[in-house]
Length: 176
Image 1 (cartoon, rainbow, N blue to C red):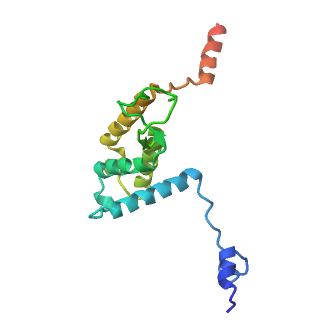
Image 2: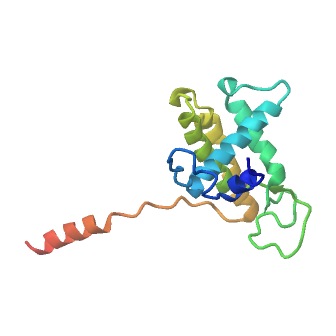
Protein backbone atom coordinates (compact mmCIF):
# COMPACT_ATOMS: atom_id res chain seq x y z
CA UNK A 1 0.00 0.00 0.00
CA UNK A 2 1.21 3.41 -0.90
CA UNK A 3 1.59 5.97 1.84
CA UNK A 4 0.18 8.52 -0.58
CA UNK A 5 -3.26 6.89 -0.85
CA UNK A 6 -4.86 9.20 1.75
CA UNK A 7 -3.23 12.19 0.11
CA UNK A 8 -4.50 11.08 -3.31
CA UNK A 9 -8.07 10.80 -2.02
CA UNK A 10 -7.91 14.19 -0.28
CA UNK A 11 -6.56 15.86 -3.41
CA UNK A 12 -8.99 14.08 -5.71
CA UNK A 13 -6.28 12.28 -7.62
CA UNK A 14 -7.41 9.99 -10.42
CA UNK A 15 -5.05 7.28 -9.13
CA UNK A 16 -7.13 6.81 -5.97
CA UNK A 17 -10.27 5.99 -7.94
CA UNK A 18 -8.61 3.76 -10.53
CA UNK A 19 -9.92 0.57 -8.90
CA UNK A 20 -13.33 2.03 -8.02
CA UNK A 21 -16.29 1.51 -10.38
CA UNK A 22 -17.03 4.41 -12.70
CA UNK A 23 -19.43 6.62 -10.77
CA UNK A 24 -20.35 10.25 -11.23
CA UNK A 25 -20.69 12.54 -8.28
CA UNK A 26 -24.02 14.33 -7.96
CA UNK A 27 -24.08 17.88 -9.33
CA UNK A 28 -23.17 20.53 -6.75
CA UNK A 29 -26.09 21.89 -4.77
CA UNK A 30 -27.46 25.32 -5.64
CA UNK A 31 -26.91 28.14 -3.18
CA UNK A 32 -30.54 27.79 -2.06
CA UNK A 33 -30.27 24.02 -1.56
CA UNK A 34 -27.00 24.39 0.38
CA UNK A 35 -28.53 27.05 2.60
CA UNK A 36 -31.66 24.96 3.13
CA UNK A 37 -29.57 21.95 4.18
CA UNK A 38 -27.44 24.10 6.51
CA UNK A 39 -30.56 25.68 8.07
CA UNK A 40 -32.17 22.25 8.53
CA UNK A 41 -29.05 20.89 10.22
CA UNK A 42 -28.81 23.98 12.45
CA UNK A 43 -32.44 23.61 13.54
CA UNK A 44 -31.91 19.90 14.23
CA UNK A 45 -28.85 20.72 16.36
CA UNK A 46 -30.87 23.36 18.23
CA UNK A 47 -33.53 20.76 19.08
CA UNK A 48 -30.91 18.22 20.20
CA UNK A 49 -29.33 20.85 22.50
CA UNK A 50 -32.62 21.50 24.31
CA UNK A 51 -32.97 20.08 27.81
CA UNK A 52 -34.53 17.58 27.47
CA UNK A 53 -33.74 17.11 23.74
CA UNK A 54 -36.73 17.42 21.39
CA UNK A 55 -37.25 14.88 18.60
CA UNK A 56 -38.11 16.36 15.21
CA UNK A 57 -41.32 14.34 15.23
CA UNK A 58 -42.32 16.08 18.49
CA UNK A 59 -41.40 19.58 17.30
CA UNK A 60 -44.17 22.17 17.27
CA UNK A 61 -44.57 25.89 16.58
CA UNK A 62 -43.39 26.76 20.12
CA UNK A 63 -39.95 25.27 19.47
CA UNK A 64 -39.80 27.09 16.12
CA UNK A 65 -40.66 30.40 17.82
CA UNK A 66 -38.03 29.76 20.49
CA UNK A 67 -35.50 29.05 17.72
CA UNK A 68 -36.32 32.33 15.96
CA UNK A 69 -35.91 34.26 19.23
CA UNK A 70 -32.65 32.41 19.92
CA UNK A 71 -31.32 33.53 16.53
CA UNK A 72 -31.84 37.21 17.45
CA UNK A 73 -28.62 37.14 19.46
CA UNK A 74 -26.72 36.66 16.19
CA UNK A 75 -28.60 39.44 14.35
CA UNK A 76 -27.02 42.45 12.71
CA UNK A 77 -30.05 44.70 12.34
CA UNK A 78 -30.42 47.55 14.85
CA UNK A 79 -34.01 47.65 16.07
CA UNK A 80 -34.73 50.80 18.07
CA UNK A 81 -36.85 50.42 21.18
CA UNK A 82 -39.93 52.59 21.80
CA UNK A 83 -38.07 54.83 24.30
CA UNK A 84 -34.99 55.37 22.11
CA UNK A 85 -34.46 58.92 20.78
CA UNK A 86 -33.87 57.39 17.33
CA UNK A 87 -37.10 55.36 17.30
CA UNK A 88 -38.84 55.92 13.99
CA UNK A 89 -35.81 57.45 12.26
CA UNK A 90 -34.65 55.64 9.11
CA UNK A 91 -31.12 57.14 9.30
CA UNK A 92 -30.21 57.74 12.97
CA UNK A 93 -27.45 60.35 13.36
CA UNK A 94 -25.63 58.54 16.16
CA UNK A 95 -25.14 55.29 18.05
CA UNK A 96 -27.50 53.93 20.68
CA UNK A 97 -27.78 50.89 22.95
CA UNK A 98 -30.77 49.31 21.21
CA UNK A 99 -30.44 45.58 20.47
CA UNK A 100 -29.30 43.96 17.26
CA UNK A 101 -31.79 41.43 15.92
CA UNK A 102 -32.40 39.25 12.91
CA UNK A 103 -33.98 41.21 10.07
CA UNK A 104 -37.55 40.28 9.20
CA UNK A 105 -36.61 39.36 5.63
CA UNK A 106 -33.96 36.94 6.87
CA UNK A 107 -36.40 35.23 9.23
CA UNK A 108 -39.06 35.05 6.53
CA UNK A 109 -36.64 33.43 4.08
CA UNK A 110 -35.38 31.04 6.78
CA UNK A 111 -38.91 29.88 7.58
CA UNK A 112 -39.56 29.30 3.88
CA UNK A 113 -36.46 27.11 3.58
CA UNK A 114 -37.22 25.18 6.79
CA UNK A 115 -40.83 24.69 5.72
CA UNK A 116 -39.64 23.10 2.46
CA UNK A 117 -36.92 21.06 4.20
CA UNK A 118 -39.42 19.66 6.71
CA UNK A 119 -41.54 18.18 3.96
CA UNK A 120 -38.53 17.02 1.93
CA UNK A 121 -37.36 15.11 5.00
CA UNK A 122 -40.60 13.17 5.36
CA UNK A 123 -42.78 15.55 7.34
CA UNK A 124 -46.43 15.88 6.40
CA UNK A 125 -47.66 19.29 5.22
CA UNK A 126 -50.54 19.10 7.74
CA UNK A 127 -48.10 18.77 10.67
CA UNK A 128 -45.44 21.20 9.41
CA UNK A 129 -44.62 23.43 12.42
CA UNK A 130 -43.01 26.02 10.10
CA UNK A 131 -46.36 26.52 8.33
CA UNK A 132 -48.22 27.23 11.57
CA UNK A 133 -50.41 30.29 11.95
CA UNK A 134 -48.42 31.23 15.06
CA UNK A 135 -45.28 31.52 12.91
CA UNK A 136 -47.07 33.77 10.38
CA UNK A 137 -48.34 35.98 13.20
CA UNK A 138 -44.85 36.21 14.74
CA UNK A 139 -43.26 37.14 11.40
CA UNK A 140 -45.92 39.79 10.79
CA UNK A 141 -45.29 41.28 14.26
CA UNK A 142 -41.53 41.33 13.65
CA UNK A 143 -42.03 42.97 10.25
CA UNK A 144 -44.36 45.64 11.63
CA UNK A 145 -42.25 46.41 14.72
CA UNK A 146 -39.06 46.70 12.67
CA UNK A 147 -40.80 48.97 10.17
CA UNK A 148 -42.05 51.25 12.99
CA UNK A 149 -38.63 51.29 14.66
CA UNK A 150 -37.08 52.49 11.41
CA UNK A 151 -39.89 54.85 10.53
CA UNK A 152 -40.41 53.10 7.21
CA UNK A 153 -43.83 51.56 6.68
CA UNK A 154 -43.78 48.15 5.07
CA UNK A 155 -45.62 48.15 1.79
CA UNK A 156 -46.49 44.92 0.10
CA UNK A 157 -45.20 44.82 -3.45
CA UNK A 158 -48.02 44.83 -5.95
CA UNK A 159 -48.03 42.07 -8.51
CA UNK A 160 -47.21 43.29 -11.98
CA UNK A 161 -49.78 42.65 -14.65
CA UNK A 162 -48.71 40.37 -17.42
CA UNK A 163 -47.51 42.91 -20.06
CA UNK A 164 -48.15 40.57 -23.02
CA UNK A 165 -51.72 40.03 -21.88
CA UNK A 166 -52.27 43.78 -21.53
CA UNK A 167 -50.80 44.35 -25.00
CA UNK A 168 -53.00 41.64 -26.49
CA UNK A 169 -56.11 43.24 -25.00
CA UNK A 170 -55.18 46.74 -26.16
CA UNK A 171 -54.24 45.60 -29.68
CA UNK A 172 -57.51 43.74 -30.11
CA UNK A 173 -59.34 46.86 -29.00
CA UNK A 174 -57.65 48.97 -31.66
CA UNK A 175 -58.34 46.47 -34.42
CA UNK A 176 -62.11 46.87 -34.21
